[in-house]
Image (cartoon, rainbow, N blue to C red; front, side, top):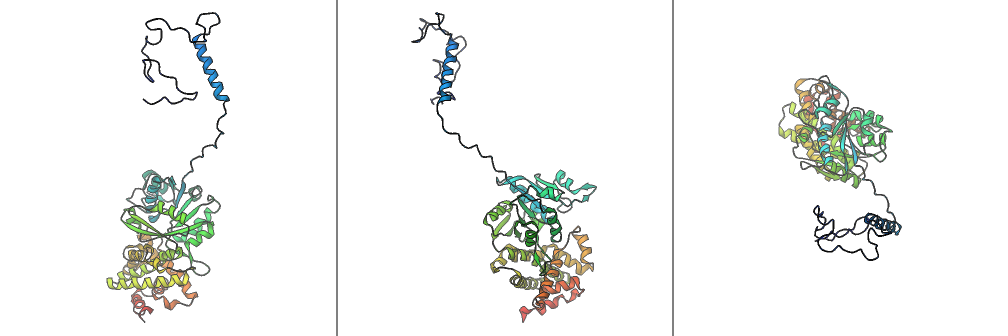
Amino acid sequence: MPRPQPGPFGPAPPARGGAGLGRRPPIGRGLGPGPGPAPGPAPGLRPAGSPGAAAPAELLLSALAVRIVRRLSAPGPPPGPPAAAAMPGLGVCIVGSGNWGSAISKIVGRNVCHSGRFSPAVRLWVFEETVGGRKLSDIINQDHENVKYLPGHKLPPNVVAVPDVVAAVEEADVLVFVLPHQFIAPTCAQMVGHLKPGAFGISLIKGVDEGPGGLKLISDLIREKLSIEVSVLMGANIANEVAEEKFCETTIGCKNPEHGQIYKELFQTPNFRVTVVEDCDTVEICGALKNVVAVGAGFCDGLGFGDNTKAAVIRLGLMEMVAFAKLFCRGPVAVATFLESCGVADLIATCYGGRNRRVAEAFVRSGKTIEELEREMLNGQKLQGPQTAAEVYKVLTQKEMVDKFPLFVTVYQICYEGKSVQRFIECLQQHPEHV
């Protein structure tokens, strides 16, 4: 039988005889004198009813009072520090709610619920639009679906659409940037002065911006605007397939090991596998340049060339990607990075299934402009390949290296200078790799 544990005033009293530990004696038994002579008074106590004798209740209260006084007067251990409050989880905000932003919100929304590291609510900044007479933010919050940019896929209920960008980001520790690259500068301008101290971000934006030297990485633009640390995520991640939870890989470029682990916990699932590398600039430039090559692959498809020709476009495009990265990136470029998902895998996926390839093929077959096709095929979202080609062309012109990158240059000339798409094959036939 276990020994009774001490209570707040000392050891628990023993159970009354016959009642058993913790059992109340039966009514009418054990409360009064049993058979046989009544027991006499305890030594040193006067019998009840005698002159000066205390009542049993008074004796009990007196003994209890003495014990309390002794306990309170006895020296005890010094008081310890107050218990630390549980640290709040990291707040996450996804800045952008298009096709890719909505797809990644499915992953993030689920992962934060299974991790003690993050706050369970994920804010999703939505550029407010009216769809079918309803605000898009209301549709997402009430129906848990982005019916315009990711129809047919339910978002987790803890993903909360917020149409005010300041309200969306002000409590966030982790900012996930995933919106068309031409909107990143004005969006960051609204966020200035409203971020939590110590907030950091990761860019999922595959594109580049115009800078003094002709080309600026999106991560650099965010760093300059917001003065925060920024990593990047790029890979063979076609948004609809990610939303359908089909297996894929991705690459995170991150120089901070602690942040790298946070991002891996935030994004990785059994069907979305994450590799973290330190070669941030190369990871990001791969994500931008592969869109230019994909436009070339779309031209190839639209002209009716076969898989052999498209394979040549992919190989020569990869060669130009490596050469441009070595020309542009500030630090050493690890060729091994091009073998990650952000490199050759993303290039292949985009040249066969991405929006840049599809729109470029339609451009050849329909005779419509890129702007018309963006409205018809992308719900007004902007194509990144042609704009990236324009920024790349500026850099190559400044460095007098136009002739070294014929595929990149030809894509630019077809999109912006009216060069006939029928002449696209010439950039492959006369490529420096064949000299």
